[in-house]
Length: 102
Picture 1 (cartoon, rainbow, N blue to C red):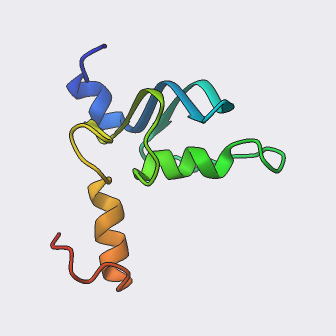
Picture 2 (picture 1 turned 180 degrees about the vertical axis):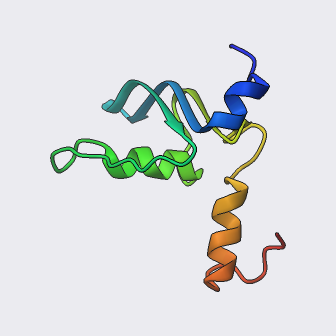
């Protein structure tokens, strides 16, 4: 695995590398690679059942990936953190997770 570079961290908010997600024998995501830059707006487009929601749940840490890595601001989801820190902060402000300290 490539080390997270400081300059890359400053410009990248989400980096997805070789992510595959399976539910049993069903392959939902296959070798997804994606880099999302800070300050940009992105959309995910696809047919029903194409894996859009599964990808978002993996980025948020709600579902573990089968293989590959997802980093949010340099921290690997499922290894360095369970959820992106910004997600917990946002949910706490909306009173979804009032008992989790930020």
